[in-house]
Image (cartoon, rainbow over all chains, first blue to last red; front, side):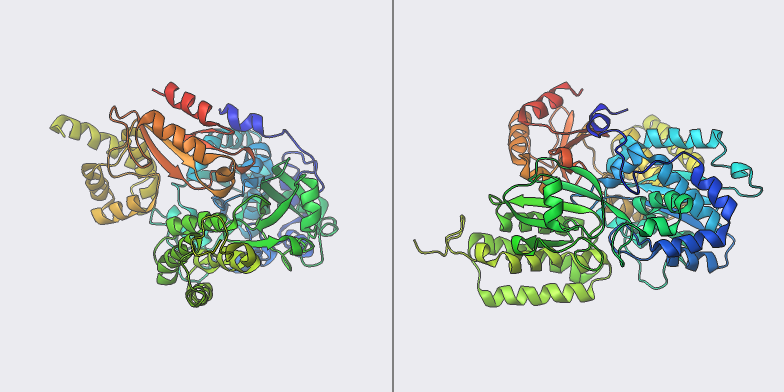
Length: 409
Length: 157
């Protein structure tokens, strides 16, 4: 096992929802007791939305899959956590694997699946051993395998599939392609995985954090879950905070907290900008720190990167665009070529060799990419480009900026 | 490659295919297995996999070329990946980069002459709270500085 990662995580943290007390097996037993329909009802009441960032209502996804008739169905746990600045899934998998696996078993029970697959990103290979051990333990406790928790004919097992270093595989259809042994290129949607997923069978693909919320909802009820957060974003969220602050790490906070409040919690000083939602998210300047973190305002999969007064925002943007150029799968043109053009534009701005008419053309291109790209990668990669150029134009288009060559003394 | 080596490799690939299943959807896992054992997936290995799964070798190659953890050319015995995403970048990744390049005398994307280390960049390792981070084979090191990074590289065989 790996010393570096486990010692760096604080052990069992405690928190209002996700990190609240839970006993292994509790969720599965309760689920069997209340039955499929009541689970779906509780899920619906809870208003749980997908925690990967897109925010699709989980109850709807499950109902659609449960309603589809097929001899085989699958539950996939999306642990391909690749978004820059996100590390909550690592913490969940290392410290709370029981919640994730129980969530998968409950999902399997509800929609009638017999097989669960954890798609673990290649970079997290060192977590695999502890997860396998945990699965073995659950098999011994009769919480996995045949006739789970003495429920006749309820069979479900989980296997772990390792990724091989591709950001785009976090997109659910690309993930399925990868599981099927192909290049991880996103599929056209529709058909959605709820109908035609893994090996063309109905498949639920849920984020690690979404699955980890489920045992709590089943045992404590949807109403309890709804007490936290806002009307449209119920429950709490794990925020992965990094960058210029005193206390980086994973924080469980209710939805609806403002950026200012969050900065206070993590002890950030002289903050100039906050990137919310990772590289594919939006960068907020100081004047907008009263915005709230919620699906209806500043939506995020949990990544919060903080920049202080000394950071050069065009350099930050260049780092993000280099990331997208490398990780674009190359399947569709807007994303493959568009990201390269945006990166070229950023380099030109950095050197001070730009005209505003060209920058405006690039902004048009960015908007086209948002509309015309096939999957979330190309649709959201223009976000940092547009938001940083807009929110920090005084800094970026200042001829005296360090590195600018067009300026007069 | 010698005939003997070829036969040995064929046997190992056959074994892998038997374990993981003789179908298209096992392809990625089979390739990961070969990568782990041989450090790269040779043309010969690609053809063997294609033969056993009854698919075209180009499908095997296209899968390898897609994933950054699979290699079709030989690499070093150890692969060192330095995270260059923004959170690590802000915590002094460039200093580590310079120190490592100087120490090993190679650039990123290259392999040392003794085939001990291949140096690569990687995107976010999910260690942003304990940045900067470096992945040595499957093992991750966090909160490194130029001095510890060089020390870690010295220690790997």
